[in-house]
Length: 161
Image 1 (tube, rainbow, N blue to C red):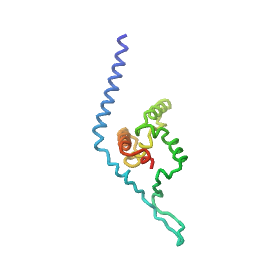
Image 2: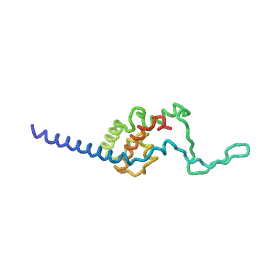
Image 3: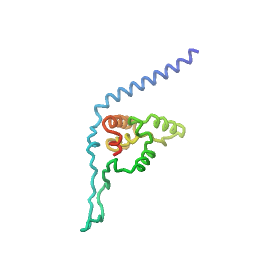
Image 4: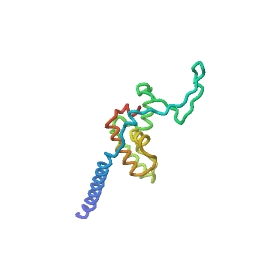
């Protein structure tokens, strides 16, 4: 019966060591995270707009064709559709979604690949504003830490906006 305890103790020790290492890396990385000023003072590049003499838009030129919209001005049905497609537990988690991570991990294990992602909207904001698209564990760790920092400093509606 004792022989059963050795693998359990070894697994417990490995998990504890892994969590302690992850915590230490997170503590060391936290001070190096970028400022969130780029999010709080976001100004998209406005395209050059050409109008007729009577004020009708003829064309737009530029890399980005977007404008900032206040979250209050977004129709509720559109907001619900975005949340349903991207992050249905957005208002319930602190920037990372353990349930989503477990779901994606299980799906990826059973399918033998990396078919499902577990990024929340906050993690997507962190990646799109601060990080590259490379798929490394280091980038994923920074994405998680940035998501937690964003959630600590901005409201959910500010993140969606």
